[in-house]
Length: 120
Image (cartoon, rainbow, N blue to C red; front, side, top):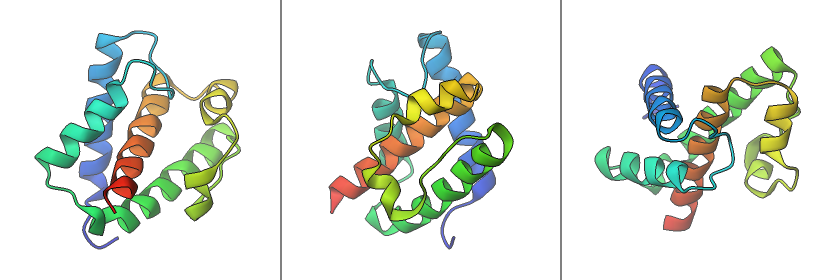
């Protein structure tokens, strides 16, 4: 990854997940209230993230999901196929008992990537 500072991304995702958990104690991967989308939008605007960062975020997401797979035995789809997965990723995270903060962070990350895809 050329432009992403992994520690900063981790810190930001955890901070955003904490804020969302305070707003909605039942929040998970699925974004029923639009909080993930709002967090991703604010991050993109505040950090001036553009489409040129999409590949970096896809690489980061792959590493993030692989760490979930290793630690919690989550069945994940990585790479470009992750943009088109048809399985219920949120249900898989819950089934594997992934902590709430990590589920929310995964949702924010997917929302952010989705918005960067839509920019093009």
